[in-house]
Structure formats: structure tokens, C-alpha cells
Figure 1 (cartoon, rainbow, N blue to C red):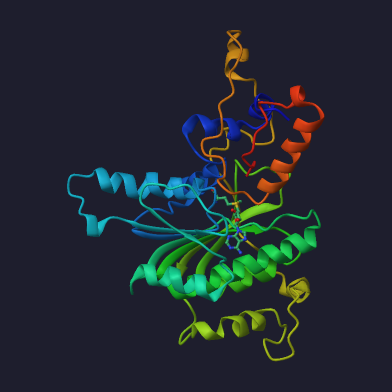
Figure 2 (figure 1 turned 180 degrees about the vertical axis):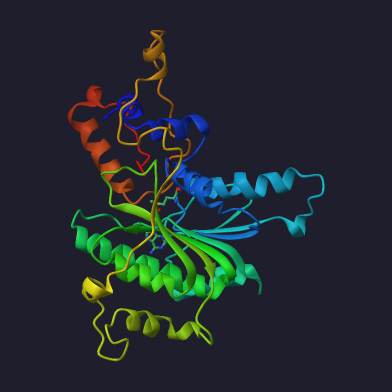
Length: 323
Ligand SMILES: C[S@@+](CC[C@H](N)C(=O)[O-])C[C@H]1O[C@@H](n2cnc3c(N)ncnc32)[C@H](O)[C@@H]1O
């Protein structure tokens, strides 16, 4: 699919380029904020799985840049934004970047060190493994990423803080909800308008961090396994089947973003075409990933195209992922 065709079929992809966002995902965080006001009173944030960086851009534009341009701003008092990803990211104003794996204890330590004894007000995680298309498998790997994020949360988030995490809705959603509810007094699963209906993606919006009394971070996994067990004891059954029937859990679910706004599953005419004017010129991606995992594959493809039919290679071929 060429860029112009993508622009037509995916309004958020086009709007992201027009507004200078690195990925369409920026709108998901903005729409979650519209509904939940997640940035209110926030000065310290961790952005987990942040590349190529559109959520970090939102954090920078909403928190760092306004504080920086305020006449009363002092350097030591500016918002602290720490972003982590397996992939390197191009720089963003006011964002400290760490390249690392969030499932690795060492990465958690590096994040904690940046906070220098202080705690974060907000942790966001838009992590996604490479999707296989096998829903059970994808949901399982996604759940592992959320648990890694929750481990970091238990170390860095202040009591009363918020955690936003991408989830895949599937058969173990009730279990995940109960696990998150153990740590937050309010958990809502939200579907921003910019997230396609065809995708099982949603976002857990967890508010008011309040871990169980005398909670020790080392006990996290044991505690979570208990939730997975019908008796809450050692005969562990980490499936959530037992949460059905009389034990059924009702999960608050909310669509967010302006409901009369753009629909991510619809095609929209391109601006010039709609006005009958000159032909539309598609914009380049704001910041293509600097070292995407598919880089080698692209290079091999380009090399083989050059060898076979040099004149047929498409100059419009685009490298930014559609996330
Ligand atoms: C959907 S993208 C995030 C998009 C980002 N929020 C944005 O707005 O630009 C998912 C990211 O998760 C990262 N990721 C997946 N597993 C990870 C892990 N174990 N540790 C760190 N990052 C991971 C991937 O490298 C990828 O960049």
C-alpha cells in the first residue's frame, strides 16, 4: 500500500504526520487523557516500550514543554520523563531515553536510579510483542509484558499514582483485571477511538495506586498467582476459568475520545480530493524508526529489487510502522 492510500484508509496515520507525531498511537494516549485526565498533577513519568516515541512526544508536549517555557520554571523543578525501549529512539525534548528490555531486572534498576529516591506519578506502557496472529499466544506474551511493567510500577510509582497499560482483550482478561485491582482502587479498560475496532487492543487505566498493606515487591509474583487460584492458596491454577459463573467479574469498559470524531475503521477522502483542488501530496513520516527490527529485511528486499528490476522500485515505499 502506498503512502497516499494509507492516508486515505487511516485518518489517524495522516493526522499524526500533519500534527508532527511519530506514530498514530499518540492519539490513543491523548484520547485516554481526554476521558481520564491522566496528566493532572503529574511531574514524573515513566514511558515503558516507548519507541518510536509518539507517547513520549505527548508527555513532552503536555508536561515538559509548557513547564520549560513558563517564566517561573527552574531547571531542577522541570518534569522528569524517562522512556525505555528495546529499540533506540531519536531524541525528544525533555525525555531521558534508556535502551533496554523491561522484563530484565537490570532495566528496572536503571529506571529507579533516574528517580533518585523520588517516585513517579504516572507509568505508561504501550508495549507490544511482535504479534503472531495466534490470539492466545499474543495475549499471553502481552500479559507477560504487563507483568514486567507492573513489577517496575511496584518499585517506582507513588501511592495514589496512575498506570496505563496496553492489553489484549481475550479469555484471561478477568484474571488480569483482578490482578491489577489488587494494586489500584480503580481499574477501567478503555478503548480509544483511534484504536481500531478490528483490533483486540485496549488499555487498562489504573488509578490510585494502593498496594496491599505490608506489600513487599519481592512477593509480587506469589501474590498474582494467588489471584489466579480459586482458593487463593497453594494449589495454583493460573487460568481465570474459575472467575466465570457465580464468580463472574464485571470489568468497567469505556470507549474514549470524541465519539463524533474520526472513526479509525473508516476511509476518509484526502483533503485536496475532497475540495476538488490540486492532487494531494502525502507527507513523509515524522521520524522513521532509526533501527527497526525489520531493517535488515528491508535492506535485503531493496538490494534484490535493485538487482532484478532497478526501475520498478517504489520511491514512495514507506518504512514507518503503522502503530
Ligand atoms: C506499539 S510500540 C510502542 C509505540 C510507542 N508508544 C509510541 O507511541 O511511539 C511497542 C514497542 O514495544 C517495544 N517492546 C516490546 N517488548 C519490549 C521489552 N521487553 N522491553 C522494552 N520494549 C519492548 C517494542 O520495541 C516497540 O517499540
